[in-house]
Image (tube, rainbow, N blue to C red; front, side, top):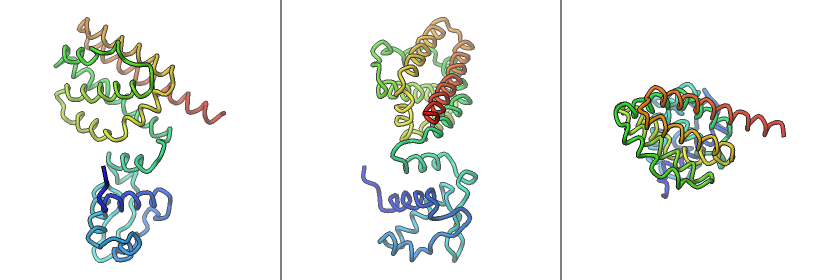
Length: 230
């Protein structure tokens, strides 16, 4: 899908911030100079700046150039998406952050989905035996699973949270599932979930999810540390 001019400007400014061209707590160029630099009209620049302010990248100042925020302090979920879209390959540390987040939230919406919609959760595994042993297949299955689990939870916040990662989840998951041992462990996890759900063991299902999320993070850290040493 072709990006609008203002979206392209946003991406270029974010890249410049990440690369240190525009430093935290220092001003951006004035609107007029940004328009000249990016060869667009000032309304396009204004629209881009509004989006950057909304997502926590900059702070607007009346009659003065906007100032670059400390985006880790002022950003939101979209800040993470913006950052990752600037990389050709997602850095290992961001996958570590995502796996850490999953430890906190996945067992909760897994349990809620099982309590309120156990049979529908079981149905999510109907084609588990057809799952191909490759990174793309596992990433797609894992994304669909978590998206649907969040939908089956009565708490809509989980749906919004998962949907926020729609553009970056698959690339991150493909990198994680590129390791065969990660796929083997995950397949056993899926099988264990099915067994627990068939027994109606909701508490057990929650614990299985928690244990697996912790193990996923441990496996990823081990892989990342191995890459640093090699």
